[in-house]
Length: 135
Image (cartoon, rainbow, N blue to C red; front, side, top):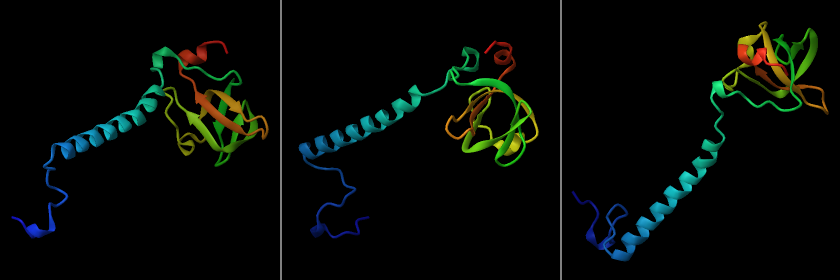
């Protein structure tokens, strides 16, 4: 059913009739597809290795035991420390752990303290195999 009068010209949903218009449409769709693939490629390159492959920790990372005691407070090796506002806790699969889910649990971690503020910046919960390795 056509509701638009034919005098208004072709509507936006009709297929282009000229060969050039079809070529231009195909070119623009191919460009858009290449752009989307280009956006996804860096995300795939940043994927973490599997658990068995091991993780690379920064040189500044130190081994210790971590207990989250409150919203922005923690204990490392029994010593009270404040956590940075963007503190990240990563589990053995490098997935982000919500801090409120581990309050009161003693975790073996590698951690990094931000040098200029002295706040706990990032901590990685270690698997038993990683904890057995010497730091």
